[in-house]
Image (cartoon, rainbow, N blue to C red; front, top):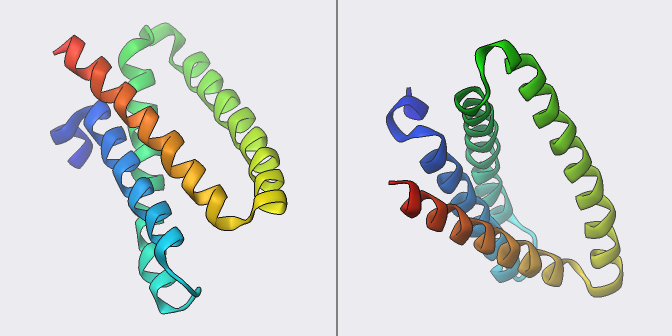
Length: 124
């Protein structure tokens, strides 16, 4: 229902905002304690929003006869992105620490959010 109300673009933006808040929280929390549990609640919002928004977006832009192919391509891209992200993220964390990793993730996600906002502004 929320997806129908907001649309895929706004839902993806909400996921980005939740992820940015989460990464900022991880950087600001001096020791991993109870605050981490509160921050991890944002993971559910981030994941569910991004998943449902991306699937809905693909369904919107792909012709009905190619829906399965579009979803398969989406899954392939997400899988590749997840694999690359885990490798690069692991290297960054190992060499520079978790705080630098989360700062970098926050910056990258903020750039993605700016891109979504600019594309959304052009299409509306």
